[in-house]
Length: 320
Image (tube, rainbow, N blue to C red; front, side):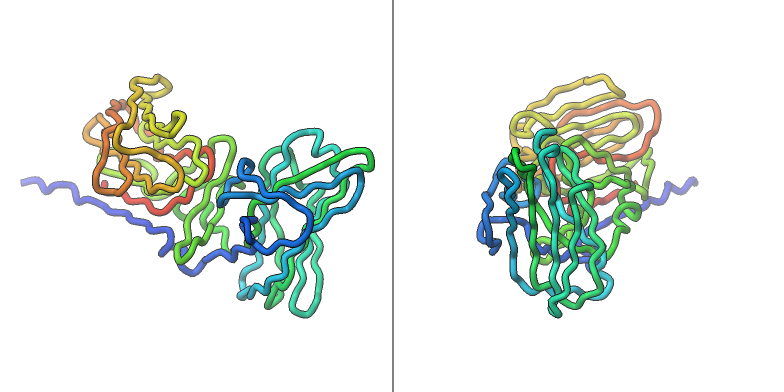
């Protein structure tokens, strides 16, 4: 009598996995976020939260905004980042100086010249955080050319204590991936205008079994789950349309009736691999799944998650 193949299980709750790696969110640039100075809020150019702050300089006049809040910096939190958006070549060409200044509890200053680091579109700029116990003030300063106007959008300023998320569960060197702590939970956070693809490190290949991703679209545009040369893609005007691909051939377009991937709603993507067939489905609660369609495959290929927009990635599970 032949014994059946023993199943393997993999379950990653990212909040538990990164429980010791909570981010320090210095600012999300939301309304009521205690910034002082001349700025406006923008609800269109945003990946994190509801708004970013537009900071501008007119005809060479320096403009600065500051936030005075004491933030404790635990040991090991040396990786800082700021998320910046610049609309076009004109804005970039008219920018003379753009900086961030941090102030410590001992009134020490650390100035980061961000001018040579920004590019058109979204930028995630790294910062080396000084070995301070506390940060008491954050200041952004911008100056344009004398005969021009320039502006940038600032969307997130945060500190991390690890970069292991680039390789331990999802494999990517993307500058669009980070951790992000919201309340008590720490998510993987993907924020990108073009689609970003993340490979799963374990298991990388699945020939038979069930895999599930759960995530929360924040400003979602498109998400896709691909395995064994097939793809389930959720897109459409309201992220309520499911597309199935075999290789590069679109085989099915299926409107979703009970579920969607609309913003600020939990989304569960599932692939059930049976023989040479993959049954794709989607859920908003992890219990009641709506079918997206089936795909056939003739070869194996790595498991990948592709995201366009911003998403909080909550968990991953595999039974294979």
